[in-house]
Image (cartoon, rainbow, N blue to C red; front, side, top):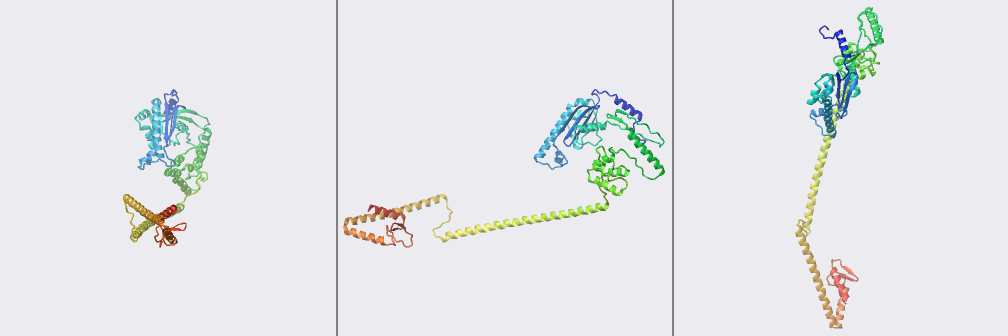
Length: 479
């Protein structure tokens, strides 16, 4: 285009000459800074030599989560787990380490020609948040990296610098009768606007490509209105590779329609389809294959199968059916859960009612028993009242025992008096004792009736109580 600004050949040659004459005394440095996903890599280059380099790594991104912890916290959903606290600490520690490194490299930045920085999204805050680091970095010419950058490591920083400092020279053929030049290898070191570039021409490859292009141009004169595609190198990265890898489905479709070859493999031997991680980009290749089956060798391009509209509609119908079944299942589970909770609540209510009714009936039965049995009182007494009643009962029992002992003593004295009065009295007393002994229905000591009682037995005697038994035994011993 005439309006577009371009560099003339003479000016380009002068730039290359100036760059090749640069002194390698650490006065014209280039710095590469890469940071992403908790990884940081920085290198200082003087030509092809590395003057200084440093790498950091911190755990700031949860596995398969896709975002840093600060990005998650910015959404409003702040996590309070041990892992989230560890990621927040590591993020602050990584920022501090990177900023300290940049401040320590101030002498390199002062003599730096330009600095290439790769820091996507919020990773730029790590480099430009501090006042010191911002003043140090902005002292030199800052440029972004126009390449695809993998995980920031020392090897990746060297690869990026090598790609930035290379210049590829292409020859054009204007007429078909032009004689092809003999191959010669020309290499020169070039750095344009802060970039070191190498000029390298492969004679054999250029001659073969030019010969094929001349044959195709000759055939174009005979067969018109037929699309002609000039094959390129089979081991190079094309714009189709970059578009597929970046996940841009629209750009991928435009490049396919423009005629870019999807069978070309990059330096790692991968076609654009294999580099596509996005499903929509892969479907773009399959849709284009369905419309252009004979245009390319789709087997060599590693595209598995064509994707037609009928297939997409059937897949959409199946997915919709799965979604409806999933929703219906979720509703059923929700209803079952509610019914189960309702049943549990009803069971708890019934159980509480049964316990309350049972407690009421038991209290009623206890009240009836206390009212039916005379002398039985409800146990609603204080501890002092209980002790007083217990003491009264003990005193009553002791009084009864004293009375029985006194009666036994009186009987014993009467017996002794009768014995001293004479034999007649003794015989009468013996007869009375024998008569009492033979009487089975009376106590052997106090001669009370044993009717309706369970007597205490000792030898051949019967007693109404243990007190009578002890008294009678003492009387027999005295006799």
